[in-house]
Image (tube, rainbow, N blue to C red):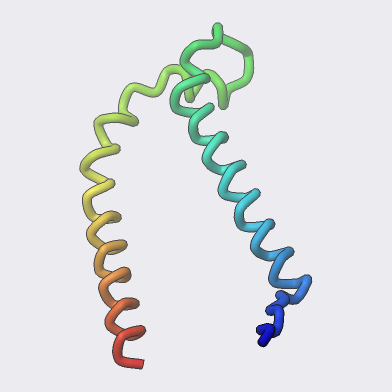
Length: 86
């Protein structure tokens, strides 16, 4: 007995690839902003100068990460409860 093949609509595939590509672009953009921009020499671009001379990023990183993680854990717990009781 053969099981029917499940196919996804082309719209679902498009949105899946779209979100994966947006995730990669965002990740590499932020990695450039945090790590790679400090390795380049000074330029006349004010955005690059601001990224290179930023001294307060790591001071705020950990304190601001804690509430974000707390909210993410709560939403994860809530979604699992809703899934379990649906």
